[in-house]
Length: 229
Ligand code: GRF
Image 1 (cartoon, rainbow, N blue to C red):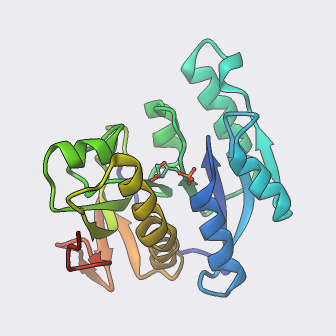
Image 2: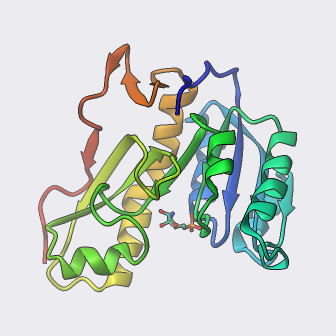
Image 3: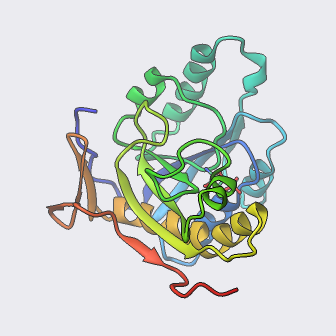
């Protein structure tokens, strides 16, 4: 990453890329509709034709595209097709929201500094899959989510914002995942994108700046500071 994230026009143009349920997409739509996020979703694109997120997008009247990744045998070919479709929508920001494929480094470079992801763990803890089960196995007292810039290395890009909840002694992975989605993820993404579109947060030469200063510590909001059983 060598450049800087550019100032954004108002309302910012967002492309959302997903594979699945689209609960983060739904939360972004709500944040825009209620005036909490000054942005416009100009395209929702899925690599799965049957993604529930596409149905949510259609119901909201958003432009949609589906490019079936299973029809491509070479990852780079699929990523080129995806990139062309995204570029056609002229986005300021490209938001991965439950996109379940590893991106080629050429794709990441093409959208460098404007490619964002939400990951369900307090990175750098638990990159990759099965984060909720791994947080339980590790005995973590808190679990959370991170919105971060995307770099070619998986889940390793500079963080923008985090938020967390207490892990309960009797939590199962699916209960923890659900609570994290409802209490944390569905607010966190819109908030972090708000930081970007307002220009409060910028990436300069791979370093996150917030309010004109280097962001030494990523903001981490506690959503329920006291663990309850
Ligand atoms: C979320 O947990 C997100 O953090 C992760 O994938 C999941 C997507 O859920 N990257 P949804 O498709 O937004 O409902």
